[in-house]
Amino acid sequence: MRATRPTTHSVWLGVLALLLLAAAMQPAVEARRPPTILENGRLLLPSAGTLSRLALHYNGLLADVYWTRAIQYFGERHQTRQRSFPLLLPLLNLTLDLDPDLTQVAQYGSYFLADKVPLGAGEPHGAIALLQRAIARQPDNWRLYYNLGFVYALNLHDRQKAAEAFYRGSLRPNAHPALKVLAAAFLQGRDERQLARALWSELYETSPDPLIRANARDHLEALQAEADIEHWQALIGDYARRTGRAPADWTALGLASPPRDPEGRAYHLTAGGRVELDPATAIASFQSH
Amino acid sequence: MNPIGAVARNTFREAIRDRILFSLVFFAAAMIGAAILFTQMSFAIDAEALINFSLTALTLFGIIIAVFLGNQLVAKEIERRTLYTLLAHPVRRWQFVLGKYAGLLLTLLVNCGLMALAFVLALSYVLHGTHPGEGNLAAALLFIFLQLALVTALALLFSCFSSPVLAAVFSLALFLVGNFADDLRAMGRTTQHVPAKLLALGCSYLLPNFSDLNVVTAASHFQPIRLSLVFLNTGYVVVYAGALLLAACAILEGRDLK
Image (cartoon, rainbow over the protein chains, first blue to last red):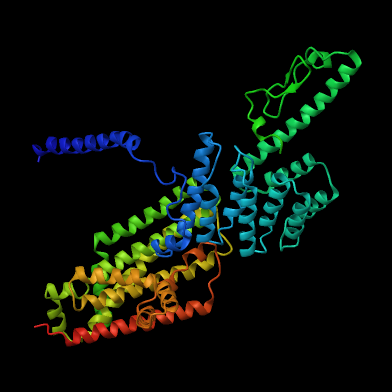
């Protein structure tokens, strides 16, 4: 028994060494293999029916996998700063084909689809079509009308259709009371930024998902920065009218230190009297919403 | 003691001694655990993903257990010649078949119970408590058990006249075809070729229909399952499994075991 022990250990060490060698070879193999179908910008199996049969009709499981694939596809391209998302809409449509009751696909997918490039895919009409499919399936789900109004309001700037969507949503059972307020606000013609703030605040307060809340917070901070810059620009304008020149620095406006954006970075005052965000801030990419 | 009960008890006792069985149950529980990890990679579908993964794993592992225990039920007894000893006692062949089936169903019930327990615990972890529609999952679990009962009956039938390997192949093949019963029926309705139409429609009604027993996707949304469907599906499995068991009894009765 004792004599066989070192041999057994050597065998297991050999197994481990071979496994490590196989793992080390993988990057070299991956660098040489042809690109996968998804990387080529096409879907291998665009038919939900065929996919469903291949998976013995466990459609829900398949839809979950495709939804996760859509999220990862968006996340990967977003992280690598690619500016197009050609597979996002087909992946989301396929997921909804597989499981029409998985309305999270439309609810959350519409944010990624509709937002402008590079924050999203810049496909607000695709987002609306997706949401309308989900609404046809679950006509009493008030959240879907909220998302529809959201896309009309912030991505297509169509106040009438946004108000209509919020109003239709407000009539659904258990609808959030804010929907009626939003519908009225859009019909009253309140200023775009106020409306955008109301929408993002509503999303920030009601969404249970930390990623959506973080996205809403970023947009709210960008709106706050826009308002701050407008405020300081107005004061600088007054100063220039009174003195005939732009302020040299913030102290000329009576401030001991430069004002700070919602991220805590100081606003820059240019020689020409323009207020700008710190180039390092992430706020700029969320602006104009 | 009732001969059916005695055979069932022995079958159950023998089955639970099988280590492979518990490795499969453990593996299914591990899959349920892995589903929790999957929810971390996805977004906004925690409960749906967990339910879909777990119930699918529960079905597929349950089917593997049912086939690989069911296919040996009779064949192994004949091979080992233990059946002769058993039949020397006052046990009729049909009693032996029913006892074997009952014992295996009991084994599957215990296994499913263990896997379902792991699933319920994982679900409470993901939901941080309970969901008002959680009761609707009971129907999905029942339907999974009904699928296993049907596959066991198939495996038992094939086990009466073929080798364990062939019995496993036949049972798994019928499980796969039975999942396409709806597609087969749709094909039959669409085709204009009369013999093909009759064959497709005939097969779709005569082969065991597993697609009607798959409500996993609806369960993942906590959708209620109609009580009438529960009764009809249960009735269907009782009738179909009854037919298979009757055939198994007839085959074994007619077999020359000398």
